[in-house]
Amino acid sequence: MEIKINTRFLSLELDESSNTLVSIWETKADMREEDYRNLFLKYMEAVQQTKPQNIIIDALNARYPISVELQHWINSMIFPVYEKLAIKKMAIIMSEDFIAQLSFEQVAEQIELPGFEISYFVNINKALTWITE
Image 1 (cartoon, rainbow, N blue to C red):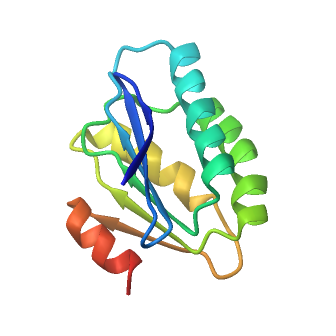
Image 2: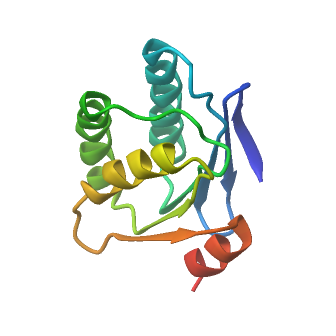
């Protein structure tokens, strides 16, 4: 995998064999919203640069609860890019933090694109297997 971004709270890699962007979110519950928005903008930049067919969101260690207002902002950013790139599959590795996981699910459930599939997993190996099926 080629590393695209590696910060304290977000790592992004492209698995070229499956054309899958793997994002590993390790956010803190008490981080500032502005910092989270900046991380998300880095994520969006990587999506636009790599043009993946599939995406894995590893939120196992994500602790930041995404507010409803921020969920709307995220979706306004995601939808046009995912639609333009015709993203096929998104796998989400579930957070151990219930509120953070719920907020990831709420963001994901808003994405409605033709041919787009989303599924939730407990580890990255199962997610990669599903992506490559």
